[in-house]
Image (cartoon, rainbow, N blue to C red; front, side, top):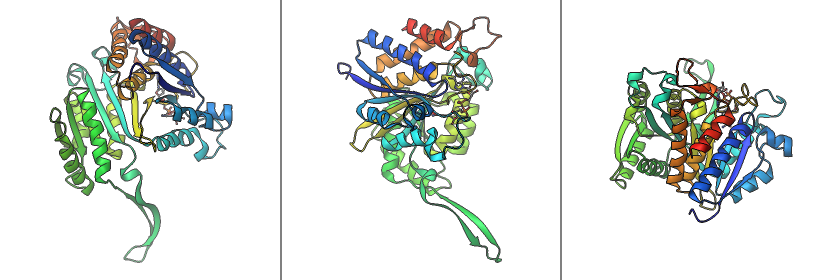
Length: 374
Ligand code: NAD
């Protein structure tokens, strides 16, 4: 794939988006030169930047660009203080993000959480629980389960004693093919890592959990080189705090993944370090990837050269790995990030004044150091 031109839609969005995207694009260009890759990067507005430029959070031209591209590198969207009169469905979080998720059938969310030893201080766990550093990947199903199952409603009912009350209903639904496809994503991802999948369910209580466990166990037979174990979600929530180093790939349905991926993120200390990937299949049966930092637009530090660009830079590494199969180029970015962390470079969010090796830098300096390390 490396000989062909790889078309990337770069949508920086709002807040810190443009600042961190600028650094990620510099890093991509550097890795492109090193590995002789041909990237065709086109930038386009999204979020409030889209509303300002073309009256819509996801302008038609931006969506068209995404359709023509091989992958989307996304910043983040949303500014809580901007025009409260705009209806919810036209605001960036819905009109841009949910629309893109739907358009590209993004059903798998991958959130790697890596805590380098040198950033041990930003982890809320005691050092002895961090082992040689935490390094896990949460694979979350994104389009099924309790969030989307029908019926989903709030209704008026009469209780047996005659009193009227309200009843809210959400329905947890998964079909076998939905579980199979997310399980394949997890096993394939494990093959690129330490070859272990921990599947999370509540098979002791939920019908969904039983089908989930049976299906994942069956799919595992296609990946004899990957070890599979199962944990109930309540135990997993505890194990993340007690012994997070036991995990490699953690496979979850939508609700459990939503909760556990945030719990795992807290282990890394700062949102500024955490990339994510969402993978899908388009209507034209094309595998597609959307890559963004785990955090938001950070309006409190936007425009001040304070944001940590590493989450955005690592998102571009995930794009190289999962959309383009460029494992070496992805690893080169990740190892350049590890190098600058070892050198002591820190943006404010990961700075520890008690660390004599730490040097506080801005967004730009961090990006440039990573380029130099490549
Ligand atoms: P946030 O993630 O933007 O910020 C939370 C805290 O983390 C802030 O203190 C912020 O400064 C810090 N932070 C986040 N990224 C950082 C980085 N790269 N470097 C250093 N510090 C960083 O969450 P929020 O304040 O709840 O939301 C702000 C806006 O972002 C809202 O409009 C929200 O809807 C939006 N948002 C968008 C996305 C997305 O586009 N996918 C995701 C989350 C939130």
